[in-house]
Amino acid sequence: MNVSSQHFCEIGKYYHHYCTDGEPEAQETKEPRACIRFKCALTNTILDILRRRPGWVEVKEEGEWDFYWCDVSWLRENFDHTYMDEHVRICHFRNHYELTRKNYIVKNLKRFRKQIEREAGKLEATKCDFFPKTFEMPSEYHLFVEEFRKNPGITWIMKPVARSQGRGIFLFRKLKDVIDWRKDGVRTDDQKDETQVENYVAQCYIENPYLIGGRKFDLRVYVLVMSYIPLKAWLYRDGFARFSNTRFTLSSIDDHYVHLTNVAVQKTAPDYDPEKGCKWMIQRFRQYLTAKHGAEVVETLFAEMDNIFIKSLQSVQKVIISDKHCFELYGYDILIDQDLKPWLLEVNASPSLTASSQEDYELKCRLLKDTLHIVDMEGRLTGKEKRIGGFDLMWNDGPVSRAEGNVDTPVNGSFMANTHLGTSLIRRWQGIPLKVFNCLRHHQKCKTYFSLKSKRTGCELSHSASRVLYSCEAKCEGVNIFQLWCVKS
Image 1 (cartoon, rainbow, N blue to C red):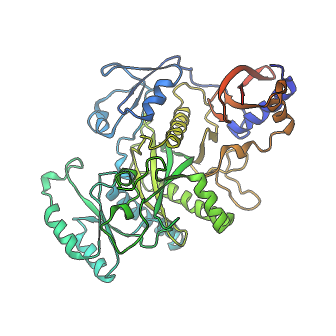
Image 2 (cartoon, helix red, strand yellow):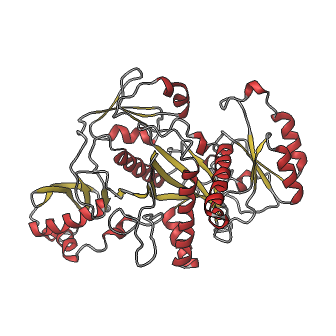
Image 3 (cartoon, rainbow, N blue to C red):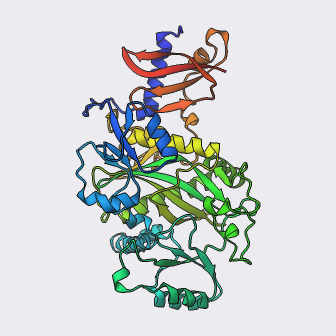
């Protein structure tokens, strides 16, 4: 393949800008590891990704490991008496439940809101008003009854604090329904261990959800936390909207196919079509809203969602055990109402990695590949990256600016956060000179597609391809910048 060194230099310059947002290169401080030994407690997409990762080797049950994608039950039973070397990583923080159990997150958000009100005033504290009014049951039963009687006739939803996939949830409007539940739900003092007790939360049901095609939906958004002290969090650009299979109505509060958007619930509906599924990619959702309401309104909505991610993480920053061996990929569930206000429903410590369609599988493969790039067991990163694959660094002991550099300085008088939820990576490349694209696309008088892949981080931007023909290493001033794969259409 004969592409001029001048073009390589230009591509390298723009690719370097993409990977590090213009940061200067730093010397590597970690010795790259030739072989990563991993264990995985799951048998879905994450296991596929780990097995395909170059230089990673799966170990048997009793073997020593460097990386463990564990489940929370292993964490609870083994973390406190497992020795880990400096380089070892696991995929949960020790007390992740402070954020992911429905009763604990409410407690922490309420406490954090009071702290903000004391320190910064009531107006600033309203930025925490993104969680529906919630009571822990049965401990706050009497407070709930008092609130219930203030607003008779509204709908409430009961959720078990430690279950998932819609199990145990029911809606109600009559106090009798809760009284019946309370008779069955009281626990004795010796049952208050988190693994035994079946507490619930009673939450004010959002009766005016934003509907598309008459159907309710919520959003699943992925946030990767690498550290709590200092707080370092990445927001993934991809995600999806999960739709109910039945048109929304408040006249039938017992119909889970109307009110619960969990895929585990919807796929059991009699008229569920597995070919069509019940998801939209979040890019499609954002395009829909932009066409209907305008870009400015949608920017405001997504900025309010950014606020939810940051405030919720800050609410547990002082209580989460920030162990250097731990990271966590959270699945946020966000509901949007008719006024385009986002509400936090819950945060999942183990978001489903089982794919419901080919599109869903490809999304989760990208998500997990990029997660592993950031965890960086291979020791390739400099620590100055603001964008890796589909992840954008949104908080690094303070807000991260979309502008060049790491400082959070205003841009033209206003701060723009480094978040791009629902946007596409391809937009980042629109500034590359046309002659570079033409060189690639029309090489050897045939139309080609291409993938740019960083040799240092593994970040990749791909176009559709059928088969790899050949590759060559692009060099800029004698340094390998990336590998260029040319693929025939």
